[in-house]
Amino acid sequence: MSADTSEHWALITGASRGIGKACAVMIAKKLGLHTIVAYANDIAGAEDTAAQVQALGLHTALLRFDV
Image (cartoon, rainbow, N blue to C red):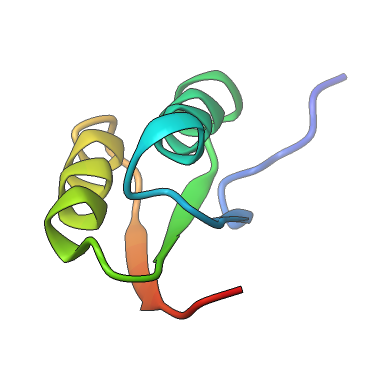
């Protein structure tokens, strides 16, 4: 029995680059979760991450904040 994740979201900090970006894309691919791409300064990197997730047919939201 698998859980319905169609309305679930993942919040990924540092998702504009490096490990955070890789985690955001992997979670979207493997778990099918919509993704909140949190970033501190790199808007271009965050937008690229969001585009990769959206290409999978999932929703994204960008959230600028510093943890």
